[in-house]
Image: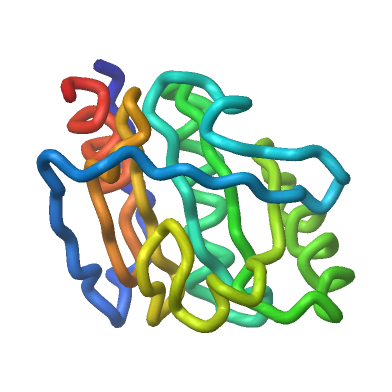
Length: 161
């Protein structure tokens, strides 16, 4: 497993709440990305997959998105960003992805996810990071700003499942 050095930025104000899950059911989802492609667990690589919930106006979301981009590329794992904002903020989400040069697709959350439901469970804060294992089960969940090393460790954990 490749390791990723932690960024040398100051420690985050919010310490992520982390947990690992065992035996959860596979997550089924299908979303339309900002570029018009349909993305689902079936269309993404079978390697561990990170799903990062962000908002465009939140600095920790921006940093988490960039850290996930770096780690997912280095480790060869898939990633998807979901913007927790209403559809009329699509132009902001597009600018967010372009400005950060994200190598993974972004999608706008649907009404059900914005209400706290949907296949991913309630997302109550940003950034929130989920890592799905090869079978599509939630292997890791973190609320708050994760370090690059935490993301790499979560991918490593999911890869072993």
